[in-house]
Image 1 (tube, rainbow, N blue to C red):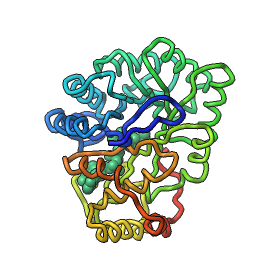
Image 2: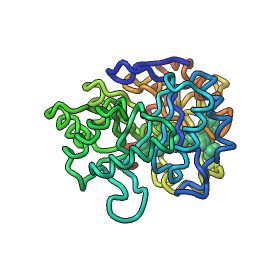
Image 3: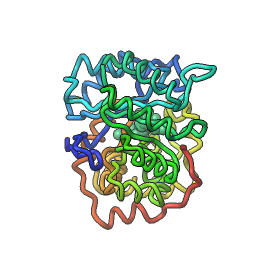
Length: 322
Ligand SMILES: NC(=O)c1ccc[n+]([C@@H]2O[C@H](COP(=O)([O-])OP(=O)(O)OC[C@H]3O[C@@H](n4cnc5c(N)ncnc54)[C@H](OP(=O)(O)O)[C@@H]3O)[C@@H](O)[C@H]2O)c1
């Protein structure tokens, strides 16, 4: 495994982050395709043994059970000081007033609930899962700063939003002397590259580390176009993200993988790892070989011709995944 600084911070992260949305009780929350504790724990252990130290979850994943499973496994298999544990806040955790969003009240409650489920007294990276258009950004940024000062959170990060929204939040924090976001977790992969227009140049300029979510386009980059799996048939969110015109890119991944005699996932992840702002793709691993491929991708160098072949047939997409 290789390690990199997260953006301009001093924080070391493994260049593969394990996406823990895959782990959670399938009868809780909206993802029926998740793995419960018994199936998840060996994968978390395998990731640790391969040198992965960076784990991403969220309060909403499987209604909090992802945090519970991941927290327990990391307590059992790892040393807390070596792990970079990331979670998120914003999604709705219960019906009714103050059940979601980024008000001071919601943030202060949700961090405590996350810490309880994770079984730890701090989170390394606390991310806002989306922008909250119904709460003043000053309120959100001051509340996040207070969590850092209270020792409950080491760094703060953000996830999918427009570049102007991210910029506004950062400059609001700076104007008040509050903590700024150090990372952007956004939707970025070979078949969704809209982030290259505004968000990635902003992150490069501001020293923000990029953590792409769904780096394999939720599996589409790993197999023939049209091939289905149990997850893909039950992935309502994922089914809205990609276009028929993406097929030629999936075919290019297949061609290069065949030439190199490696699984396609390695090629698609290696392409992301070649992008300058990317600190660590957040990979979803439901099987042992998914982890093997992610770890191997870190060492795979693509040639200039291969990078160009992967990029050349990209078709612009409408903004999605915010
Ligand atoms: N911030 C956000 O809004 C947001 C949104 C989405 C995700 N995330 C984060 O990003 C993480 C990853 O998301 P994701 O699971 O959608 O990412 P992904 O890595 O694009 O997709 C994972 C899926 O790809 C397939 N796959 C992975 N490795 C493979 C391999 N080596 N060979 C063949 N197939 C392979 C599997 O699909 P099958 O199971 O179908 O075989 C697996 O479930 C999440 O766990 C979460 O932490 C964040």
